[in-house]
Image 1 (cartoon, rainbow over the protein chains, first blue to last red):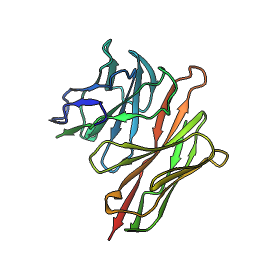
Image 2: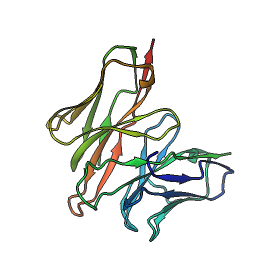
Image 3: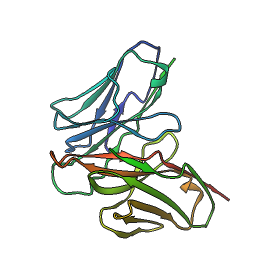
Image 4: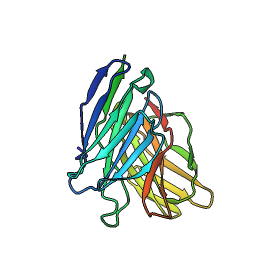
Length: 116
Length: 114
């Protein structure tokens, strides 16, 4: 158990709909990362938050948005869903910025989104 | 930007040794990671290199050459449970802000057969 919690674990929805994925980082971790992993694809970096502020952006579509709340949990919002959005969405956390460490990311179990 | 290359798939036999290579190009290199990911599961951390040389951790070792933009993960005494994807990831630091992100390669799927 990495200490990172993601909900829901599975989600099935239709094209055009909107969903929200939730992530609670490890206790004390200030950074939250979102990654998308499509079938047989690598982890695609979407976005990073640090202590409530957006810090880095990857290949995140305009239909997607995220935020990190004062209690450090994060939500990833996916709207106008398309079939190609079906993927595993991972959240990871790290304490970066809170002191020296190897920079290891701790991953949640992922949210599997299926768009029909 | 970043570019990370690793073989798509490799096969090996139980008990053997396998080396998974990774080459990278990045503007703000600040460390290289290897993660293991079993199908449908979360990636788990294996190793970290920031200086040139070999880091050994049990059956797994990782090597880094920063001048060549090259790393490898060496797995010894392969076991069936080692069948998984192995992800090479580069930590890229933005010099202006000091903030870092971890960029992953597409992963190498290793199949260990009896």
